[in-house]
Length: 124
Length: 249
Image (cartoon, rainbow over all chains, first blue to last red; front, side, top):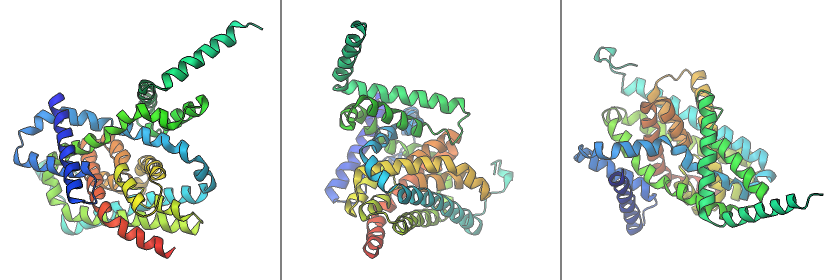
């Protein structure tokens, strides 16, 4: 677990350092993700070492959003004043985002990447 | 009146005030309350409407409000949980790597989905908010709300929003997306778990991804991929697109 955690932190650190050095507009952890993915492609043997820890972290991903969510108490005034606009905009745009992303992908998959035949054992 | 009781209550309040100044309390109550919320979620058969983040946020917010504990004090402890968002983002490389063969086959549908979904969500958020009379700072805070927290906060700052408000709106968006996705996809007859996962990660970032992992590893991998790609794409495109829109309104 410790080597895996250290690996994740090292890649995050590399990501943060690269982003800072290049003044890139992307977040460090996302660059770290890309770098780790690259290393896994080059050295697939690394997978077994980090997989259990990575899975544990990702299984509890929703916990990690709780502290930021509790920050709602700092904004009750504004949220109350603009409740209707914020609420409607938030719900509608989330639904529109979900639906448009799903419909676009389903439509493009039919056109350019037909699903493999069920013969190869893959469930649709 | 028994003088012992108020004295005991006062002593208890003293203990709370003392503990509240240490990071231990914020960290402990975050884990305890989340565990409780997660047990309720489990008891509900992982029903999308029993979102554990929403329940935990409401319970913790009420607790802090009732005890008069400032958010900054709470965050002293909760920051250790918050910090793990970084390593967890890096950890997404693992499910991505395991789905690599299918990712290669589906890169074009995914790219299209990502661009359309992200832009549609942003334009709708700004447009609807503007029609309903939201202030400019609120609109700028709403614009990046489909992106994962650290990226969204950075974008909000760039386009004149309030980063800490954006963090809250990001979490709310994730909860709305995670709670509504099953019903919406069923209504639209979207059954493919790769499409369901990818759309959920595009529109509802990490909380959508967490929800997707609770449904299946496959759906989670595609949600995680969408979340990572959307963070990249949004960090590059949203300051431009949202900045232009905000200049018009």
